[in-house]
Image (cartoon, rainbow, N blue to C red; front, side):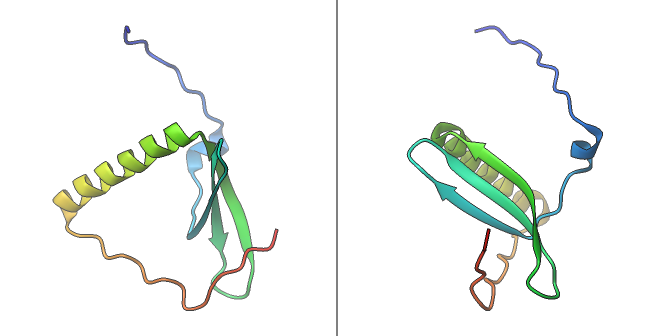
Length: 94
């Protein structure tokens, strides 16, 4: 297999990124779905900021890449403190 360069195009709005402070993961036999939300600090209002759908094989590669990057981050900057779980269960109504 030869290395090929791939050109990636992105819309200006996508380059800005999106902030997420909550995420929900669901799956079927064929795919994993990652829903990223921005939940307001006041009230029960949230916005879906991104929905990512992955095949199981790509999801496993993503999990490995995230684990690898967390290890590298902690080696450089120190251990990351795991965020506390929400004090109450968050129900998502769609």
